Image (cartoon, rainbow, N blue to C red):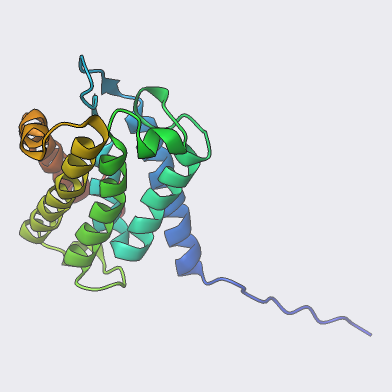
Length: 194
């Protein structure tokens, strides 16, 4: 009597692909966070962290892109030194140097960028997303990051909101350059097959 074996797929191939990509983007964000330049005083360091958000939304859409940044945050909160300059822990996110708002902003920004780029919750083929839509999506993500990060910085450091915004203003052009580089990398197909 021969035994019959049936294969049961518990999770679809597409789900595995998106989850794997989300984990890889979380790891990439952690690695890019270590490329940072400390700024004197209480200012957040200049880092390559935003690239994680810039890649997650367009590549994975709002749900899976958000998951990528959520995984990154949870690993850091759990104590793994994945935040800029090797920082980690819940205390760092909540009160450390006032950067927690930017970290949370990256998560929300990835969701916003993904929703705009993919026009919904389901990821579309990247080839269907025009460069102007990608730029608009990532610009919206930058706005979200600052909308969350600046008030958080103000609250944690005690700086008046206008002063906190003035302190962060020099970072905006740098983030827009990062945005342009991220679009070029995504459009060049360096992170995903088209």
